[in-house]
Length: 285
Ligand code: C2E
Ligand code: MG
Ligand code: MG
Ligand code: MG
Image 1 (cartoon, rainbow, N blue to C red):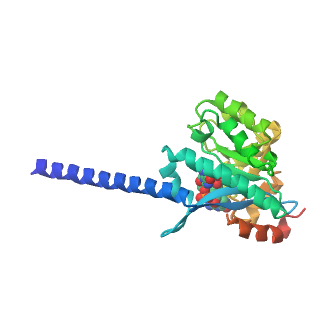
Image 2: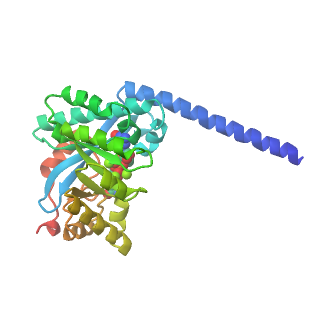
Image 3: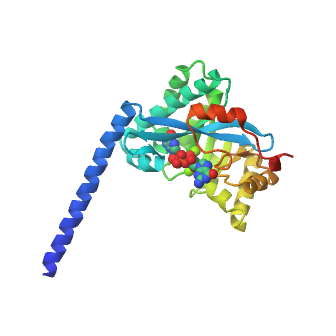
């Protein structure tokens, strides 16, 4: 009887696995279809200077306008893309859409830098920088210095020297580089030492914790100090309260991004938002 039960368990497990696999395959097909039919959209989240009360740029964040499930966040679809042949296709869409967004903003009188997120495997593809050069050249109206690339330190950044070489080529094109989620990876300082960067992004987990946890505050302060030592810009992610912004200002970090300032939004909405945003009085010197 026990043997019988064991076999049934295995059968159930196999059936569940197979269902999950078929589900995933169906989703990959759906994703490919979604890319082909324009169901993806880049939202923009503002980056501001809290002291000057100015909008200094925006981060482009992917959304899937799913015909049945509504607007989906990357957490719902990036895991299905990563490691599949859709990786490059999606990355290509992000780059081309990002350049189109910069053009759209500039045409609307807002020539702001826009950051796009590039996954490590895409960045490390052979010839990535040369390909980017072609994309930038295909948008002659877009000055390359308005394009910023956010990379996340991850175990997938295997070969730092090679990545550094790619980043140097990108910078030679005029593109700037931000290190995203700084401090959350395993070898933050090694990346800092080895990569040519322009900006460090303080991860939102530290910003979210810094008013309650002395350790988080120390890390935020440390990252601000590191950025200063390297001559890099620094921006705080995940500012959700006025007080967090104030604390960052007191520590010498004026640039910020977060729900307290604005959530990611479609470009049309962003244009209206940028025209009317005012920093809270508490942030003014
Ligand atoms: P990320 O690049 O670190 O982006 C910041 C994430 O934090 C975004 O989530 C943003 O909506 C969210 N966020 C911003 N301010 C706040 C805040 O004050 N509080 C909280 N709790 N969250 C805040 P989102 O849009 O869901 O994106 C998640 C991640 O997905 C991104 O993290 C990025 O790693 C990835 N991603 C998004 N778009 C793309 C893309 O086009 N290409 C690639 N390769 N990855 C992308
Ligand atoms: Mg990012
Ligand atoms: Mg981040
Ligand atoms: Mg993140």
